[in-house]
Length: 460
Ligand code: 4AD
Ligand code: MG
Image (tube, rainbow, N blue to C red; front, top):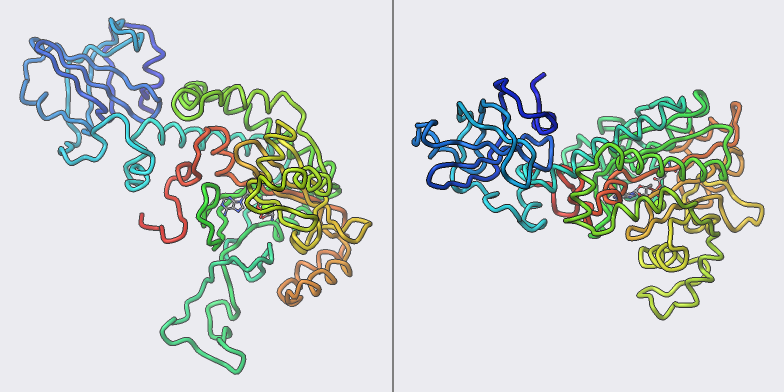
């Protein structure tokens, strides 16, 4: 493996000739010397290469080195005279691997995040997106580490499905039918002619399939792409996002909440430990105080509150909200933020929601009105995790499916799992991009996934 700039920057000056490959971020020319900042995506800070023009000689070659060009250079590491770095490369040879013309869009050091979104195929070459994507990668590793260390089995659930997990109908259909010439039977579209012989869609969650594996392997987790055709143009919704869904057999809602809390703390701490340079960068340029906030979250027990108590708190200040609440209404972003930022001043787990506003699979409480669902809300973002204890009783589960007007045939296999050795079980889903948003402080979810998909946007 070739050495990356991150490793080179941690070295001491020395006589050995080393080789560096990367892209030129900036070029500063003066009469006798030329400074090139070279970045290879391994760090926020690049390596400064210093060209002594007199000894280098080849003015023409140096002239062709422009911002964005790919270069390979050799030289010796020397102590830097500048404040910004401890070592720099005293350049000896230079090779241009790929030239870069002057219409390269990333000429300046700073660009607006909206502009960068329009060049999603180039934006990883910026400090910001580069740092976000390194943190995203580390966070994924932290998630696997947390579960693997605890014996959870990583299960890959299907992306194409015929059962709508959340029952909300916000699915993307998957079909090979000719849309200009759809076969029609007496009840509308004749799906027996379609690829799968029935109506299929992209999954909105791997939970249902995950449950059947938890009922065999006990503790499992999924981590994969998820698709929702929600027409919501917000800073926290994508049409294609990644979700992490642990599912635990012989587990009730209290244990589920404990796992969710220790899981979030673990992955936040992991990133603070492994990505100090990126985290310092976000703290300076994206969200001031972000590191302190994360430390506070790691060190403080999350608050717990029932939905009913949450509504009581919210009703006191109903005049502040665009959507005033009452018992039975959905808790929206503005309410989530108020609960976690103002009432609790830390993350809060809200539990026991009215059955009407939650999915069919949640276990009913004794009161017959509320279900054992839980949402983890964090300051600035609102909901980051949604989970529940599942209805493990066959008849009650069937009852809920029928009550909600869903077709029991679509959930036949899922119902069967309740007939053969059914046990209490619970799990949750973490929106992976929301977690990346939270640790980096980046305001818009579209900037924490390489190629965001949302309403009217899947261009590259
Ligand atoms: O609350 P949700 O809808 O829960 C489920 O899908 C359950 N099946 C999870 C489970 O119990 N296994 O989604 C879980 C999380 C949300 O809390 C949110 O963080 C994220 O997924 N999420 C989205 N992230 C980005 N864009 C969207 N459109 C999202 N919808 C949900
Ligand atoms: Mg939810």
